[in-house]
Structures are given as C-alpha cells and as structure tokens.
Image 1 (cartoon, rainbow, N blue to C red):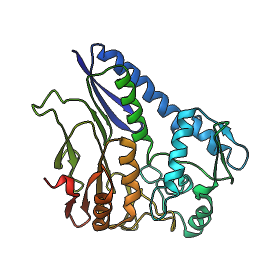
Image 2 (image 1 turned 90 degrees about the horizontal axis):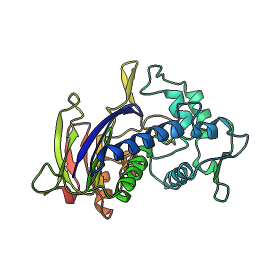
Image 3 (image 1 turned 180 degrees about the horizontal axis):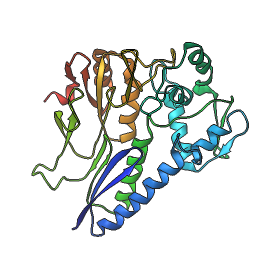
Length: 306
C-alpha cells in the first residue's frame, strides 16, 4: 500500500497531512481542496467568507449558511453557554479590538472594552434549525470560531479518509494533531507527538506522547502575544472582564478521541488554575491532559503518568 505526505500553508500555519492508501495522492488532493474551502468559508478575517456574512449582517438580518458551518456554530454556542468556562464564540469584537497576534495589536481603552462586553453574549446568537440560518441580535456582534475550528476540520478530514478506506493517517493542523490506524514507523504501532517546550524556541519538546486513533491539541499563552508598557498580553480572553485571562497555565495539552474536544477543552480550561485543570481532566471520561505552569512546573493527568 502506498503512502504520501503533503505540506500546506493555510489558516496562518503550516499543515502536514500523511496518509496510507493505494491512491494516497488522490486523498491528499481531496483533503487540500477541503481545507482551502474551509479557510475560505469559515474565516473571521476575510470579508468575503460565509462567516463574515453573518457578522456583517449583525443586527440586520439572519444569514443562511451551509450545514457544516451551521453545525460548528451550534456546537460552539452550546459550549460557550457552559458556566465557568472560557470558550466563547461571540468573542469576535474583543478579538478585533485587541488584535493580539496581528501586526496592529493594541491595548484598547477600558471604556471601549466595557462597551464591547455588551456585544459578546452567546445567548444573542439566534439559530434557526429549519432554515440553517444564523442571526446576531445586535450590530457590532461577531462570531469567531478560532477556538474550535481546526479540531472540527481535522475530524472531518479524517472521516473522509475513513470512508475512502485509508489504512492509516496523520493530520497536523499546526499544533492540532489527529492520528488514525497503525503508525508504520514504529514497531508498537503508536504515533509519537512532541509537546513544545513553551520556554524554548520552536522545535524543542518537553515531552513525547504516544497515541493511536487519538488527537493531541496544545494551546499556549506563548503562541500569540504582544507587549504594552512592559507587560505581555496573550490571546485567550476572559468574557467577564474583556481582558486576557489571568492564569498560572503557560501551556495546556489535551489528548482525546475527537480533535474538536481537545480544541474546546484547551480553551475552556484556561480559566482554571493548573491544579484544578488537572483535577477536572481526571474527572472526564476518555480525556487525558498535561499542563506546564508559568513557573515552569509540569503536571499530567492520571492516564499519562505511566
């Protein structure tokens, strides 16, 4: 059986896809086309995307979208309404105000932040199941799916590969890894995934995890930052305050069956202390994880201790 690998520069990152199949190149072509389509339709930064049509019509009218985008928004809204978690797909106005990770990042005045807090309530996202339409109640609202989109994309690409009878696959959407089948490069059949050391340059790993038919998602405060008056600000926001979350977690990794679950949890748990995040992970079925603290301490859930 043949295998092939492809690198893509999409979604602001380097994507790597490897697949084992008699028509491996054809499967990679399908995956590339799908990912290009996702980037075009789901982007919160491209004015012509399907998602932006929803945002541009905030307070004006509902917008009918394709089922996959509607499904992801529905998942995102449900997860955003969970109390004491830090995922919020209505966070778009704050993302655009701060612009962390972009060349024009800024520190908004508090008066602006307080006004934006009135526009980030996920309850104000109105979903019409029959017409597959999305309506944002107030002008200025904006959905941002960056906290869960790549996991959704990875899961969907893998489903395509499975339907086409791929023997094995490795999908890396820039820090979001999903594996399927036996790894042919190791006798035990497990894939090796290195976890970035957040205090060293890219490529330096702090731990290597072995997985099979699982996903690994890592999110870190170090990924997107900017400095203002001697203080560093990151890209994960507290919807209650409008400012970046205050946490002792520098890096959070989730191991799960589905990649979207890892994406969701790596954002939701950032509001916890490192100790409580590990306690929460230990309470979740089929979920493992590890944290690295801002003080360079390291902890794993029970299933990763061996």
